[in-house]
Image (spheres, rainbow, N blue to C red):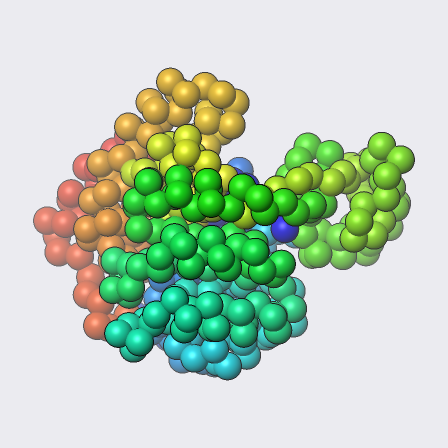
Length: 348
């Protein structure tokens, strides 16, 4: 599965009394589906997944899946602390049509999370997962930072296709990219080198699309359903490193990251995409200019004020953010005013 581009890790909307507000969830997903983002991440840290019940997680996954456009890669956050529980949620996400599972590092028993533990955990899940797996490292929240050497070793597993690295450590990104250069995989993409998802193929088949291949070579996975004359081809990709710090996006891309899963994209997806697009086109000066435009806002809103500020920023920019769930607390009036000032020139 191709994971190049920008992915918003969407929030989970709540009613004031605390129940999940599914209609607003669906409305947000529909709007993200119309942006240039490559896909959508459901039940990441920004989605307050750790504060949801198991039933709520499954219901949120289902609602978001039904609202998403078929051409967007859907990534499900499926981590719980145990390998078995993680696999159960991963299997559910795959069953309802998700393309990739994002698995956060277990961390509660962080003193016991040695390299052998991490290798065993991820191999257990990846060996059995019906969909590709990406590692999720978020040491600011978990207190555990998976070593680059462990990631490099896991990159050799055929079902571990990438990592979301949220530490903000650009040198670590460089080290992981350099250490996984030997990993080469073939993925099916569109003629314009965008991801092909199982849901896209199903939608094409339902619409009566024809089966075609490019260059006389049959795609390794099978002939693909095509709608409107769009053809598929094969693209070679390596171990795909995505980053989670919007304020470090441009330098991370320069050292080999292929995209990002950015909480700041929840409120400003186009502003984040413009950095990626400029870098992709080789316009490094424009990419740096676009990076500077959002750096302060991303650092303050996401890195410091966190989910309450992200949700308020979404409200300010026309999405539905709404309240957070305890023990998180809403922003103060002063913090709201600060968010509005930071986003004054970053409206989406």
